[in-house]
Length: 150
Image 1 (cartoon, rainbow, N blue to C red):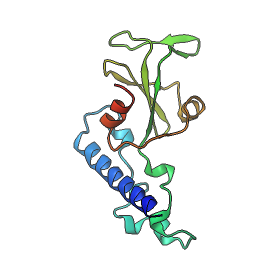
Image 2 (tube, rainbow, N blue to C red; image 1 turned 60 degrees about the vertical axis):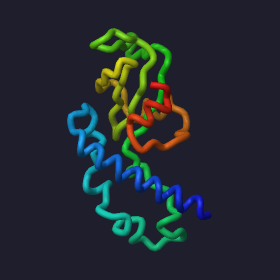
Image 3 (tube, helix red, strand yellow; image 1 turned 90 degrees about the vertical axis):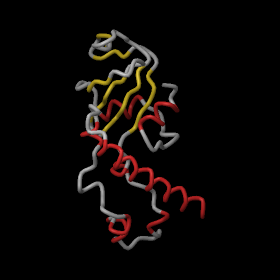
Image 4 (cartoon, helix red, strand yellow; image 1 turned 30 degrees about the vertical axis):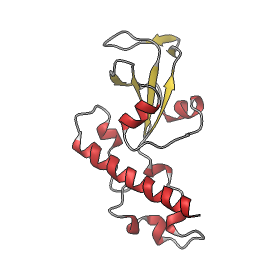
């Protein structure tokens, strides 16, 4: 029981650090999409809507909702085929070994060279159909990329 409380507390701290880091780096192409809105980022953990609702579990034991997670990422090693054509990086021409970032209802592509671009033909539903379960939460984008081998 105590490990779960600590994990949730650490997750909230990581989420807060991520928000602060994104606010400090607005030049990233997907920073505006990752930046939380006032409805999804409460000012303090005490004022969360979950804390105001009388529920079975105390607030410290509740699992964070999907809205509290900034985004998800996965490796996509094979060529990415969209509408019958192989998708390649516009800057370097790479056509495989992608990192796919799902942020809100958008999917961003990142090649091995670090070029990032929005792919308007893909959405969160496509991402969810092609990704496996989340196995780990990362405090920053760099940590996630490092975990995936980039």
